[in-house]
Amino acid sequence: GENVEQHPSTLSVQEGDSAVIKCTYSDSASNYFPWYKQELGKGPQLIIDIRSNVGEKKDQRIAVTLNKTAKHFSLHITETQPEDSAVYFCAASIRGGTYKYIFGTGTRLKVLA
Amino acid sequence: DAGVTQSPTHLIKTRGQQVTLRCSPKSGHDTVSWYQQALGQGPQFIFQYYEEEERQRGNFPDRFSGHQFPNYSSELNVNALLLGDSALYLCASSPLAGANTGELFFGEGSRLTVL
Image 1 (cartoon, rainbow over the protein chains, first blue to last red):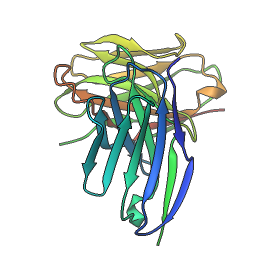
Image 2 (cartoon, rainbow over the protein chains, first blue to last red):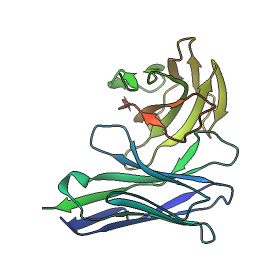
Image 3 (tube, one colour):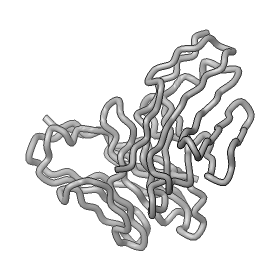
Image 4 (cartoon, one colour):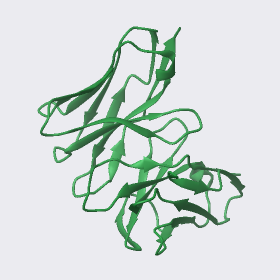
């Protein structure tokens, strides 16, 4: 069945350093890949997304890259700040579904001041 | 503009009981999806409602059922609760089906504990 693997499960970086989170998906029909940030006690919030016809997308300090051939996509956060500390989830669209996604298991990012 | 609102925020039930969770979507949204998030895991798709009908369903048993009302609000019902149903239940709304921007707007969830 469809699956999304996410690594690492935890990541600690010094403030100002970069953070990279990687995901692999299994369904070649997936064409939409969002990234969500979940703070303690909150619901997930979309931070960036990418569609399969694009290889890279950037929004200020956040960027996402997609390698369709390898079925890999990654989140890059530069110049990390303490407020970036949260759990990050990658997700992939499910074949034949609308607004139906399979999520990775999450990465807990800690930015150390 | 209120976002997605869910109630209750926390509740405790015992095995075998039934529970109903409620969700009001973001203004302007007509599609509601429900996700289950076990502790330390990513959200798992339960089902999705549009035009008061279940349109898509994930791999969850029939004990999980739902409803959507004419004002687009939705309920999630779980019967015969099991210990394994303990989780954060997230409601997410999305814009009119034709828009298909991809973005899901999540509520803060209802944390269910089954004892």
